[in-house]
Image 1 (cartoon, rainbow, N blue to C red):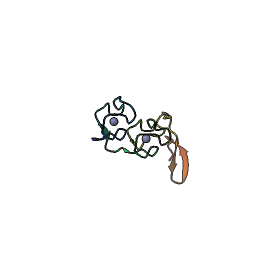
Image 2: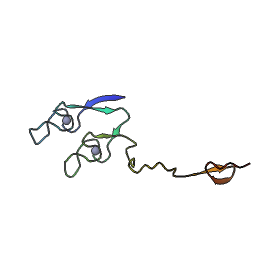
Image 3: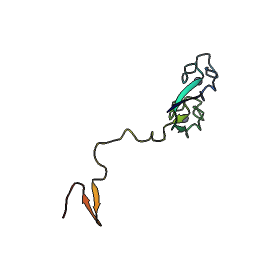
Image 4: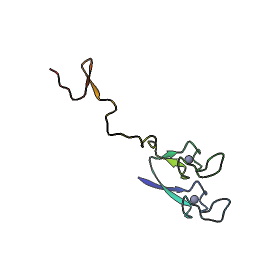
Length: 99
Ligand SMILES: [Zn+2]
Ligand SMILES: [Zn+2]
């Protein structure tokens, strides 16, 4: 589900605080759409800005919210990370059938 929230980056003004350009996050609309299961970005505490540099937060890209499972999705391999299974009390390679 998608919901609309006030843009945290420009606080709904549609503009960046220091510049006359429209806000890049909401494209000047003042509102952005996020998915309902998204959580507040911890890196910027939901502000959309990096605490020190005041630039767009890299984690959430200025939205202030991120997907909870956004971490480590790049290193996904098709290989089974644990190709073993328990048979009774014995650990065996997966797919092996014993009587
Ligand atoms: Zn904005
Ligand atoms: Zn952030």
